[in-house]
Image 1 (cartoon, rainbow, N blue to C red):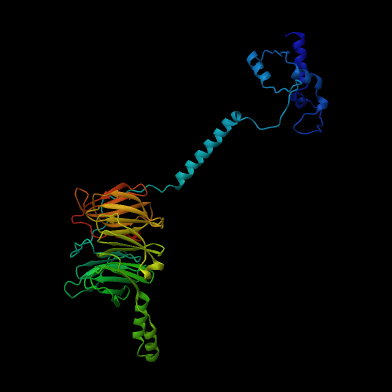
Image 2 (tube, helix red, strand yellow):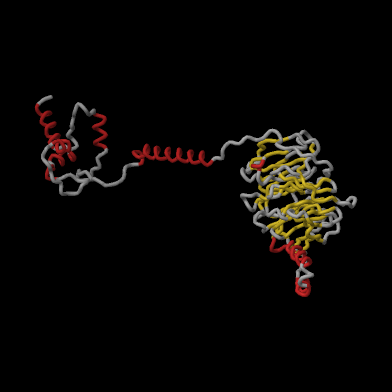
Length: 441
């Protein structure tokens, strides 16, 4: 290193920030914090180095390629002066930083999704409990099994209706019909599981008190057997082979029973009240051309789905049922529409299943009135139940052309891919209902 190089290194060290940091002398920098103090700078030399294009500063630490890039990166105006612009760094220089930020965000999203995923559950391969059911009707169109929120299963076995308590495993016989060929054909628990609605072959409809095991009221209106019933608050809807749908006001029956029991104590008062009590028939609809075998109210209680043996599916609005004007009519099924189930997490979505000549599960958007999915099951569909804990739907099946008959099939929603199936039923499955509290098992 010659004398001139040593001089340059000394000068560069003299003006470097490192010298100021190592020096014991404390300097005062009054100006802007982003600009150095001009009193410590050799402005003439700096101007010469920046504007002189012919001067090549060579050092053992810098090669020619690097020096050329430094020269090209300088922005000079027409007078040869460098213009310094306060601006953000170029996109290329921040690419790596953005990549790190995107990677961190992606990892955080994956971590959140993993934390939100439901824990793994195993699908049972065998039944948990088997109950004897002698005298169970082998009739596709009847609905003679219902599970209440009180964890009591009501099932009709021929002329007898039994109650099975899943908590203490006790069986109670509610009643036995003495009349021949007048068996229960429709059984449904009310929403609070206090009242049991029972429809019969002879077109009679009864309300039973679950706690006292007593008959509350007999409701009239149908002329043939009642095969479907559904509750919507205090409104009980029934469907019959006479092709009609009737909405009954169950509050009338409770009032009348109380009036009759108190008639001796307050005769005049009770007679006046009995005259003012309204009829239990809230509305009657006759749109189906065959037996009404499927009824289901939506979870919000604003819409009713009714399926008939004539392959038609109606959607009704609760506020317009007295006018007999339906919201939608679906005719895509090729057989009786008995299996109906409203989605618990999408209130406008309805699932329906067809009989022997159809064998399809169809998912409907009742707001738009369109079918959003259809899946061939290769077997008669007798029941549908949405899983309240997972996005799945369970279907029960009867007759089939292949090996899929008499089975339960679990489907993933909304892809409708089969998750699993359960067998071991010798005859076909007639009804399907869901347990409200399975912790008792």
